[in-house]
Length: 274
Length: 274
Image (cartoon, rainbow over all chains, first blue to last red; front, side):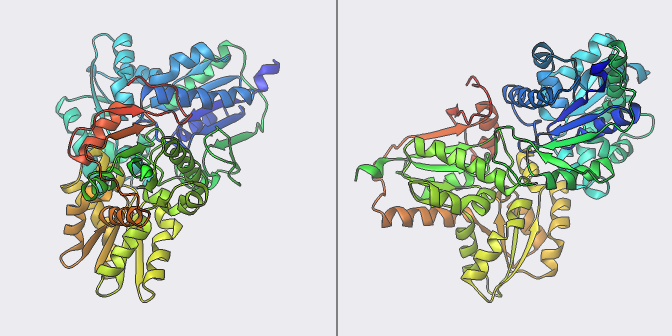
């Protein structure tokens, strides 16, 4: 029982994973959560497998040092490239967002024609395709990298002329393939879901990994008898770059003020006054 | 005379500084050049002053270790935040891109109404405003951060509906202020110059720091008697993330194949096979 009061660690390249943080917090309101955003090196989605693995090792190492009972890799790119490595190396269970998102898509699709959008790195990894085809061998998977969606979401341009035009360009092929389900394979994309849904048209189900990932976290904690029953569990936010930037952009994702945010030393920059 | 054959080091957060590399190479074709792109941590333009200074120190330290005779900080954000620190700390002359760009704008503007566009970090630093107002006290400076221009340029979306719509949104205020000169205060922006020129309309002069920076490099080398007269000087490209990504995106900037590119250890990721 002693371990159940330990926090859950949630790691992302930046603020996007706050959508996963929120889903876990809503499903498991008694859990203490530590969120780490690697804002000094964001984004991961345009970087190489080796670099993403190195970054993910450093970030999850910090969470383990903080004494977490479980690690959630909320970043799709880190999940796609580094999950197996982290599961082998870390002393606690590690849950990514790719398999939960893939599972939700296979369950919801009627026709088996499933689209996946994500960063260039996530798409090129083939992780979603592999997970979906393993879970549902009759599925046909169509993928598209959408690199401009992350900066659009971070800029707060989530609807209107520009996001519509960008979405029309990226999603044209997926529309032509008549997918009935579309996986939002990047934690930033739910910010653009209204625009994406509008461009895809009616009858296409958008799948966001966050809620399904939260369910996997709950199931895993229950299976290990690690669910926390305390109330008022503390939350902690860590950022590898300036806490102020994290608060500003992260607040937009979470829809509320984030306070306090602590700077965390990943060995990449000097101490930043908070 | 011995030092004249040493290379010039050019540092940027990624591939954007290749526009500066090219301008130096065209003006000084006998010089050996070492280009370092910190692609494992790109972009800098959304990060804090402290982090950018730390990254700039690490990158220019590598160039000094390679024995360069002069360092060019081709990244506007690094120039805005780190130039003075680097000039104090490094044992060789250091030239940034902000002052050359500011100078070119003050010379070319007829009305003194000068616009500056750049990354959020460059604009918030106030470096261009300060440089322009020092050089031309009667100038009126209007600035605008354009964070989506970098991902647009890296995606290769340099003209058409999306870049036009983004440019109209960002540039509306500068148009309303009737600037007659616009500084492209980020090395990525020349890729979008046709679209920017079209949106700004006729009579607005676009200033790119690259050529003016190359002239300052030449003048500095001449003053120090360090101009190289050899022909066939070797060039070297270093990247902190995968050489393949650098070649792919960098080739678009340079308009030719970049080969070979070496991975360089900045202590942020393990060895990447090249």
